[in-house]
Figure (tube, rainbow, N blue to C red):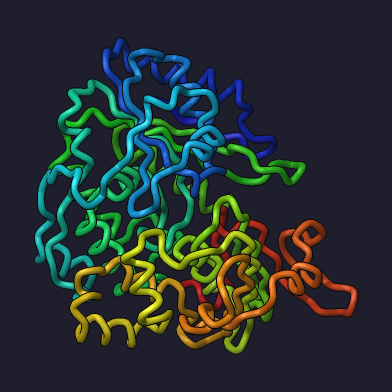
Length: 423
């Protein structure tokens, strides 16, 4: 059922209003003795899940016994990242998700269903797995906290993705990611009903009803002063809260352009984007916006690796970012890719499909490394002088020499497409 729904599209919802809303929601839920919170990690810093988790701790105190950041296959959060995102919540409450070994399998989504919803793109079972703490912890409330926003794998991020992918296992993560990539990102991004979402909904309906999960969902946009703000807050234990949030996210986070863009410059904040695994949001969030023969320039001062995991990093370095047909061919021919379908999907996520050039300007990776994975390279310092993110505004900019660019200060907050490419 839907426990709460609030939208403020002009000024946004203040922190006090967020706290008051959570108090109202938690009072509706009644007395709880043992609570688990599942917020996102530092890569979703702007979701405002950090402050919501702080308010949750202030409400439940000793009853909030565990906090499990939904890292998926990302690196575990550092102590400094935890403090930055979650404030003064005691560090001893935080748990590290082991996506390879610390799992409980709730059930298996059968291959015939996967084949049907993917229209034959893939044909395999997908396990629905969670961190075993969800099953063994004897919680009477599990709070999944996060942001609904356009996403390359599932269409619209969060809801049960935060649980089944964020605290899931290698096989489910890999197979679901490859399902989305093989089916086609352009047919998924910005949509609430997709093959990957249907797989996770199948898991919720068939295997997870015994888990006391309640979703707390935000939608982030810009206020009247062009500052980030919480535009919507939704809470519930079924799909209704997600569908309402997805509807608002499309209005706030999906930028439809009249014409395709010739040159796009994206800035990756160094604290959030340290790998191309995350930084390639600059690629797939703009892929439907850039014209054939266009150019994408990625300013990446924090970039130091390719994968958020050593195994995935090795695969990216081995094969590089190539188009979908080539990745499908490589998967058929190579066992390491067959065993790492998430990495295979990521090779597709970072490709322009040969339509436009991608130039990375990294802070801590060499020219040879960047070019080895099929990106172009340019010097970061020189490009920061030419395209100064402190001066540029989001959207169209005309530079001193007359050059026109489209600037994006944070690709994680939106999806961009031209009308002719969104279908």
